Image (tube, rainbow, N blue to C red):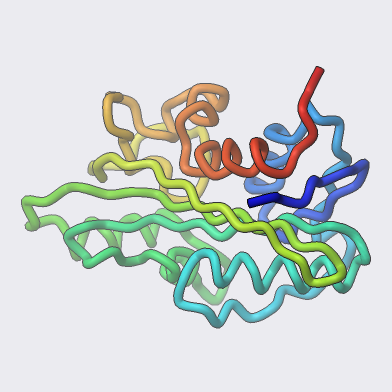
Length: 204
């Protein structure tokens, strides 16, 4: 199956999340793309009405591509806990919503409260990456990072639920790892490896 190549130099990242923008800009840096966030362009945030990460990423990518006239990359990611039947999952950000903004300490506390007595500690992060072009074409990729949730939260790097997730084969949480170490094994890196193989021009 042939994929459409992404030929720069400018790419819209369909997010208003500064942490996500920073991570994706770092991943794309070797290809020389100028990555601009949807927030900086004043683009509205579309309603995420799908029940899958890929579906929600597709909504965001298509909306940003059509509004900006540029290729757009959207990421929809979330944290899932086996003992909670995969929740919070696509509702990952919703669990952190408060009238004053997102509170991930509260959201992590909710996970601990609901799952503290369950013997199954398995958890995973999922990341869907969708590139959309203004003509409506999309390329779609899904990556996962598996591990266990821990309590209490540890570490000050990363964002979201990173302080309570220890990936398989490691002892540090995502939030205790140096950014480069996390990027090497994260769900976003797994999805990005698929994207780069399919849609980014060969380096060198």
